[in-house]
Image 1 (cartoon, protein in one colour):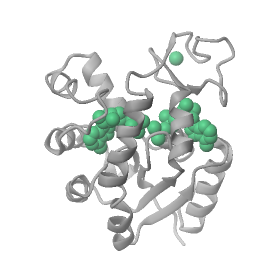
Image 2: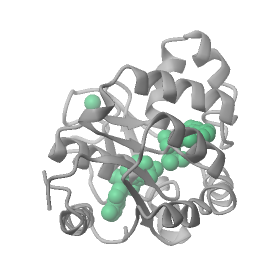
Image 3: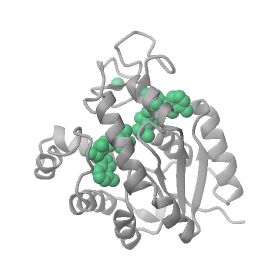
Length: 219
Ligand code: ADP
Ligand code: ADP
Ligand code: ZN
């Protein structure tokens, strides 16, 4: 089988490891990673026109309206040479967004990361993130060497505002209601790959690599 370029999306509940695995995949396959939440937080920090609109939603546990999300992501995709591949994590998050994406870029792999809600809560309540470079840590699973300090850039580590018990619950509900139907959508497109995301980070990554290798994607 000839080598296929990765045109991938990653979806799963908050805390399933989309950002973590997306970054590993992008590095291994040498393709750009577009993290929806990350991109939105950058727009907000830069106080762009779209950032000001996004601010109302991001961090409050509700989804950003499709029209706005689609515009921001399309704009980002337009800056890439899509033929060279990409990994999108956190987008699409519902069938309407997936339908929009389908018109902008053809997807040949949709990775569903599956974890129980209880594990999502455990992970997100322990998640801390670098304020400068966005590197993610977990207070007990993958702690930084120096407490509170990013091992990569020396930046301060902070909890995200939406990683509170109440907002985690709300985001999980939204996931089950809005995002889970993507399973059927991508299965029908013949590109669905379901991965059990409960093992430690390197094991989950190896499982992805093994399975997508069999599908003809080679790093
Ligand atoms: P998402 O982008 O899906 O919200 P992240 O990649 O930010 O998820 O991961 C959420 C939290 O869980 C982070 O603190 C991260 O370090 C941790 N984490 C990610 N994958 C695993 C894993 N396989 N096992 C344990 N902890 C993990
Ligand atoms: P997580 O997966 O941990 O919830 P993200 O960093 O991916 O976090 O997203 C943070 C927030 O950004 C979401 O709670 C939501 O408000 C917004 N967001 C991210 N991606 C989308 C999307 N595809 N559609 C709508 N809102 C989104
Ligand atoms: Zn950092």
